[in-house]
Image 1 (tube, rainbow, N blue to C red):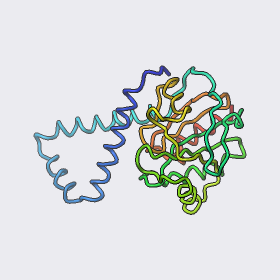
Image 2 (cartoon, rainbow, N blue to C red; image 1 turned 45 degrees about the horizontal axis):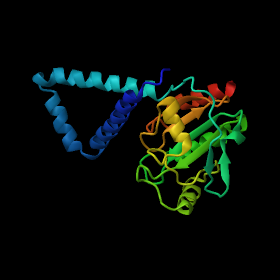
Image 3 (tube, rainbow, N blue to C red; image 1 turned 90 degrees about the vertical axis):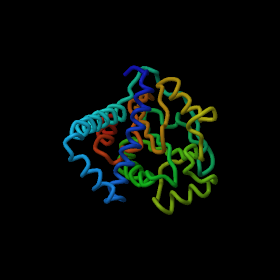
Length: 230
């Protein structure tokens, strides 16, 4: 895929946030929802209603398209190193020849429950060669400052056993070299917590999955299985 999809990524992010907000309103404010539904039934609003339905479908198409495939010809990933939350370093070169799933994470996010799904992927596919790597980040203001607090949170709440990096910048000028490389080579960067990046055995980024795509979704598992076959 060409690397000129940054605008579409932005649209996808906005659509994801809008869909989440609408779901929240429907759950938390039934009176508001009832009033809107009643208004939608009026004859002069039907055409507008149809437009919203079309936009919803288009939004879903954008989300599916951008959260499944990122394949490019940027070449193998360089030997990046992360500082491990357990001490020492995590060298990506030590995973040479194995698929890697890297996700920026956060302990106080609405998507934090995906830690459980990432752990499940680790347990299910690690023997087949999959490496799951978590990269905690406070860039979206939903992570602890202290690495010790992050480590304890992950172990106590989710029993995490896959490797986790120290709290790391994933966007901006202070972003870790791996994330700066993603921007340079793939025009790709996290728009929110739990953006999952899938790297194949040859070290090439082949897919990214947005925050709303759960790690245990069929879409993600199909992509992982396909990578493990190669």
